[in-house]
Image (cartoon, rainbow, N blue to C red):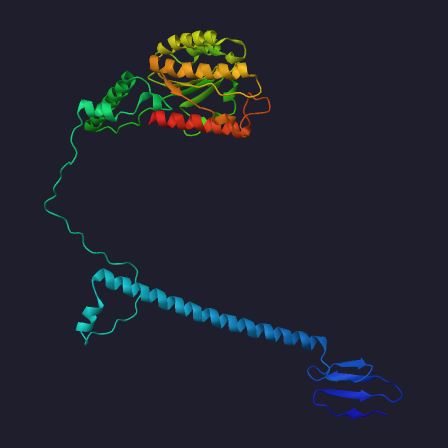
Length: 356
């Protein structure tokens, strides 16, 4: 009834009258009932063990490869250190060839590269190849006043700043001479005042110096409103603050150009009472508000540039930048988020140039 089949990989137990047989795996000696014997048989556990052995062999090969790569990297690093050390110490191949009995270099760890001693010259010649400019040459090389997008304030203000800076330096030297540590100079106050277009610009404008910068936004304000609020914001006794005024958009909606100019002149008289550096920003363009208002803005900005030059105020011209797509809101008057960010960065850069 039982017939053992001779096979090197399995043992087969045949059963008479049935087409099945119990086959044993040659690796783990586990039996399986198969309908017939066809070829070799390997159980699932033996297959998993074979796969794991292949994986282990592959990992061992990768580890050996990584070890060889690491040895090559160490060799290259040691060679690089040796070459750099020879270059710094002045050892060249010619010198090595001239001394055949030289002992070969021994590999060693280099912790710090040697440096050549600095050679100090006993005599240092100092001269200036430039000459002092004559008054005529200074007038020729001066930038035309009309070409400046930012018209600086009058030279009297600059002279006052220079004299104040000289006094600060002198006071610092005196305090140092008496053994006291000089204190940090107080930063100038910066005030930006205007209509609702300044709303949301505080973070960008005041970011570099939140202690000395402030933005005063007056929604719906006209030129007369700013003139009335100046006295409560800046005192005449303050020491040369920086004042940036942006107003006029709301005036172009209802007032005539002559009325707007008179209001600016009244604002200028008020500003002159303040010991401050004044810069007036141009009126931003508008869209879909009619050709009359757009032409009025162009006329006011053209007059404002000349008037600021005459009154020795700074003038910042935005030009037609805000007519680009995505800067003006749907009403054609206010700014989008992108436009507000561009406007704030323009004012921040203006302040930085003016203070420096």
